[in-house]
Figure 1: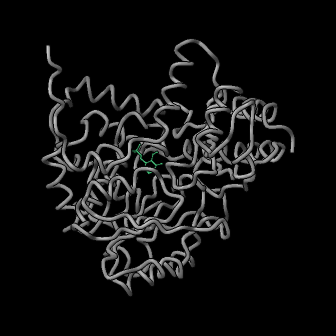
Figure 2: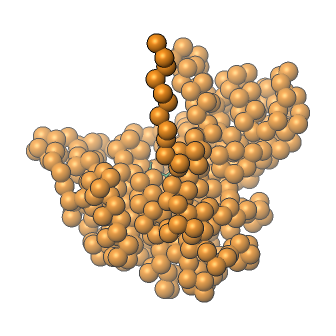
Figure 3: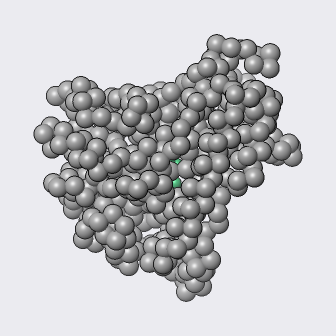
Length: 401
Ligand SMILES: Cc1ncc(COP(=O)(O)O)c(C=O)c1O
């Protein structure tokens, strides 16, 4: 019997890169399945549970049959809760119809990028970047322009570098503050310089602030939307995922001028309709309750990041500094590239991550998908004992500094 013809797929399929870590993730899953212990230092989600009052709200929603379609952009009470939280936490004032609830922060980002980008528009993405941005830009028919940020100052986008990458096609800047993977947190004056360039050059900003609750520096988090005249050219993206240990509930949101939100609503109405009704009630409970749990998590992460950095400084050939925000450490492993480790050549961070997994059972994320192939991303959203044991195992393989 002849093999069935393979279908011809749409052009975009070939333009989108699959997750560079999927092979590694599959290997971790296999090891866990086979009961091989793995020290997981790559996780991109909080290790603490969704709070009880949030779970209770979801259970109550099910019990009261709150299980039907809702308004596409989210129930009014959740949108109001978002408006209130943005005002209280970030000092930015929006109306309820300037907010849209989506299926996670990732979906809100996609809606925003898809809504703002026209074919051939250039989207400036500071590097290192979260893996998804360039792919979403390409999916929107626009062109990602990667803007390299050097390690000094702390991998932050500087005004001159942004300016040097502008062209007549520049449309949008994707800013991620606090940053995944570097942990960089912009100071208000640094944002003001970037804002100045955006205003001068008629650029929009998609500001991904999903880690805003987790900063460890005196200047804390500032939203670029809170700077003069920036609210009208910013789509602020946030989510309940990281702040409240709710990654699986899939609730994110965007706040932007009404015309942008209306367009995002139209897009969403034909793609997903409303996000899950039960998860919306849960998200509302998370946003309106006292925020002590978030502060407790922040303090816990603060202690862990110090412990992780101290431990990593004892490992040979790894360079890193204390991150200012989020829950990641960005490790320069270039000293290992081109060397032989455990009988295998380390060509890049992918090889190093594979060797660490095979020979030390430590799972870390190679920087390749973030635009840096000699870096590793480690997470401190894992229990401290696991973090320290994992680094100890890395030290046993890589040697002491
Ligand atoms: C920088 C950044 N933005 C957005 C997201 C997406 O969050 P969500 O799980 O709400 O889609 C993530 C998740 O890892 C992230 O790291």
